[in-house]
Image 1 (cartoon, rainbow, N blue to C red):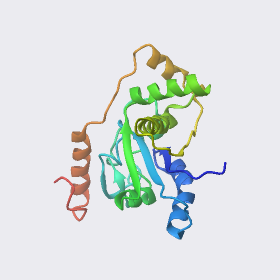
Image 2: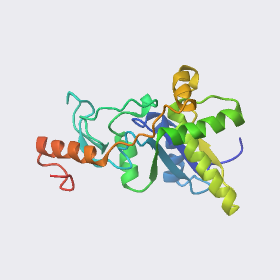
Image 3: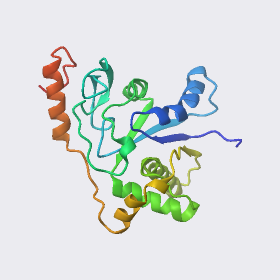
Length: 212
């Protein structure tokens, strides 16, 4: 396709698939080869909001604290995932590279609950004939939102998003959504703050901005 994106959008759990999508365009930006300014948007689940509501600090990548401390956006290595359907987005921390670029303002972030994302997944299925997995439905939701903004303003944009999974193993999730059993869960900020207090107690030298 002889076009270049104005926006690059991907869902994020740990950040690997999103990194594979946006890094080539970020490389163009750094090298001065990009023909236009491109926005990079990382979309996560509100049930695990490490980038939008977590803290940027040093944390372990696992509950057993075997993995060395790495600076990342995190909701705490003691995080216990809620029983949501986007299982691939329930990791407590974000990749160090994505975290750094988010902290520097290069990467934007937003979070949606699973009702919002399944609304977008339903629309995508009806219009494109493809049933997306719950995880990339977060990116679809963001892409739809951006397209609707363009419709309102009359602005033309090329929006690139990553459809990184088919929903053929997620029929129970769609059944829960269609039957009204699905809940719009959001992880409480108090739990994030409590996890950060425990992390600060474990490592007193950590970021002074963490809750005490």
